[in-house]
Image (cartoon, rainbow, N blue to C red):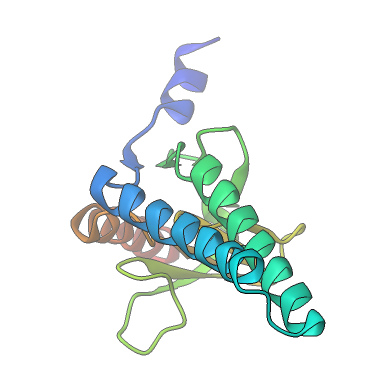
Amino acid sequence: MSERDERHDSVEVRLAPSPGRRWFGLGVTYALGALLLYLALAAPPAPAWQVFLVLAAGAALWTGEKMRRATSGAVELTAQGLRDTDGTLIARLDEIEGLDRGMFAFKPSGGFLLRLAAPRSPRVWRPGLWWRTGRRVGVGGMTSRAEARAMADLISLRLAKRDR
């Protein structure tokens, strides 16, 4: 790998879930699944409600597992763009049209929202870390607000420099 490739591939900012938020979020999600399953089996309601409770418990446990796997990684900003530590390219910097971290933006808690120039496929949901649907990418959730702000500031600077 040449020096130029290493420079473009080097991580400038890394946004990882904070351990406290991660364990709290996982605990609440798994506890919800366990509680719903307990309610369905310990004091069975009408059969239709029992099926509903078992399905809701399964959905909560599935979401908890998906969240556990997603939050074991991090989001990294390189010269090329945003990527997940598993190698998934979230968005290239030249695809980003704008960044929003306002109070009323539809974004993850403590994070930011990227608007892309064109829809990027496929849709991806990494609960607690990031999601992508159409022209929108949300980054944040279980991450530190300060680290997310630092990453958003750096992306904003890059966008301003690019648009000059």
